[in-house]
Length: 213
Image 1 (cartoon, rainbow, N blue to C red):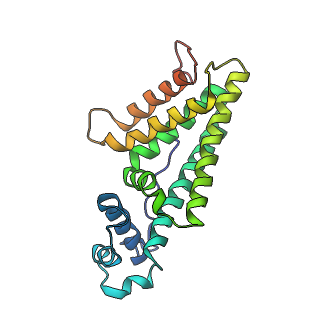
Image 2: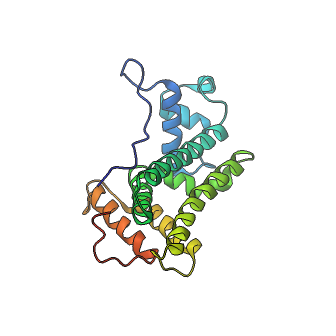
């Protein structure tokens, strides 16, 4: 099974050492937004978590709002890129759907904090950031829905509503971020593989053996 989603952690520093201060601020903000929520987190707390005292934090980021927007925009950019790689790598509509679902699940298994903040804090974003994130989400869902529609047109899928099927597949993947643990009962690859198979069933593909996809 191909690993469609790539890790999207902090970029390595040129010397291979510790992340730079700006990256430490962003990582601290992500941790605190996930644990406490955007509204209850202060810039002073973010600075303290990052090991930067007082106003010096503003040398590395303009505002708390910019930190939130950056987290959510990077998340959607990563998801869209992984989805496109999955779609480009498939040879038929079934393999493309399975690969797209697997990429979606793998990202959420690896990036629980980003997924949690992205889903909980959308209303904390100011414009134009909120509209930008929502536009990217719409593109992400629309690609998946079109793929299901294509499968229906080809007679490979049978489902009453491609839109509802795409929502179900996306919600299923998002839920992985809530419960998956690397040291849990199932490995990441096991979860990804089984969810890929379930995505095909949601779309109405009833092939008895889809392991070749």
